[in-house]
Image (cartoon, rainbow, N blue to C red):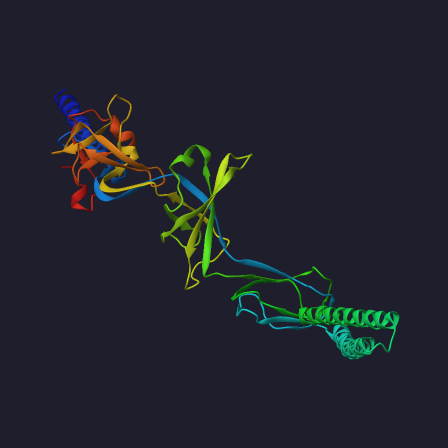
Length: 377
């Protein structure tokens, strides 16, 4: 009987020990998920934002394409076989530089013939002029009749007209011959070449495209309802696809007086100087017309609670959440930032997004903070 009682006590002590062990393990597991000892809510850095001092800009957002101000499509003025190509895509050319040569054999013959015709017409015109003067002298002496004098004058007039016609034909033949040498209309860069040596081209055929990259323009559209804040001369800040975060700027030079009937947007043009040819035409650009600009306290738009009559923020002060009414200034919709003119100070930590649902007075701790300025104040 005593042995049976001792056995029961041993089993009880073993069960109790197992229960204690399980309790410790459970408490340890629960402790990994529980709140800190001071009952503060843990928030990650993504749930807070720090008020900073920065430049903020506002104005209509624009998007468009960068294009050269001067862009020439060079077409064939005469037909014939292309005997030589002297320039290729990407090559810088000077004004008047030869780009290609079209076979000029037939036009050279036509020019030589026209020049001979001028020589013959000049000889005939000179003879007719001398004859007219001689007949004038004879008529004054009464040696010829009125009819003979009129005949000589008519022959002179016809000879001079023939000379004028021959000179005109020579000029035309010279122009046609000059057209066989395709030349750059201005200094720039060959952006396209549509012909090769040996091709037979007809008048009007596309040969080259030449652009002047030293001056570019941003062709962008702005919504018609925001046109009232856009004026010629305003600065434009934009970025280009392919240039990362590098900022670019220009000024509004022209505004189209007619809105697009399908989009109801108005086209505007911004001139950008590009003396070092670092910018490439044809790229997509996005930015804004800077209608207002100021430097002050800036915070993300997500940190502002606008559900009540006055905008407010949830600020961390001495480890607790406090609600503070603020006064807002400029809003940058492109950067998703807003200026705060009153209510906070530089360096204040604000709750953003869903963290704003934490009620005032709650203790909060920020995890993985690497910058002392983002710690709860």
